[in-house]
Amino acid sequence: MAGAVIQRLITSALLVLLLACGQAAAQPQQPQLQVPDNLKITILIKNALIALNNANLTGNYSVLRDLAAPGFGQANNPAKLAQVFQKLRDLKIDLAPTVLFKPVLTKQPFIAKNGLLVMEGYFDTRPERVNFEFAFQMVGDQWKLFGLRVDTAPVPTAAAPGAGSAVPAKATNANPAQPPPANSAQQAADAAVPAPARRPKTPAVQPTAPSAAKKQQDESGWWPFGDGG
Image (cartoon, rainbow, N blue to C red):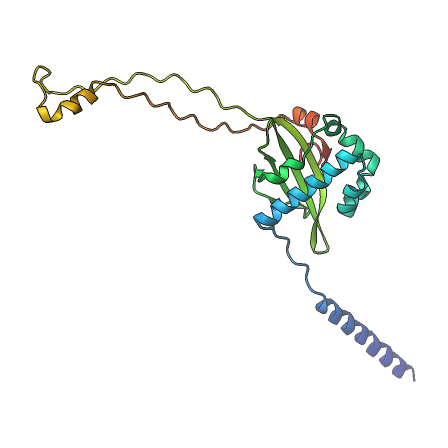
């Protein structure tokens, strides 16, 4: 009798183990996160800026918080977001024109170790350009805003070109006293007029990254990577 009970218990345990293994095998593996294509990157950036701009214009950051990932909402209530973006609001900066510009990425978007999609760059607007850094988290099957820093800065100016140096004419073995042939009179007249000096090409000035202290002072936003991110 006891042996039969033990046998049933062993059989039941094996059945539960087999069911558990079957369920584990049936669960699909989580797909590896991939950086979206350029079109999706542009949409994510512009949607985030539009949401931020509407919040700045109205002073209501609830919608921005609701559109973001749950972790963003847990770390930031509307009052905190209003305080974070006080600078942009006081300057009365309208970010709406950025929708007419193509974002310029200063580094290739990448997936961080914590699974966040990170991107940074600027919009080449005038008189100041709009700098941005965004982090998005995959929630379900959608990338949702998880961190952002947005500010404006003067457009870098190109360095003044240096003065061109005179180029000496090439020496020839032609006899200067010998008159040119009649059919080349126009060529001789043209040769007597010096060609205009070409302006040397000035290399494009690459924007330099601000120091950590300057970056921390100018930043406007909540960033999940700390001051050094």
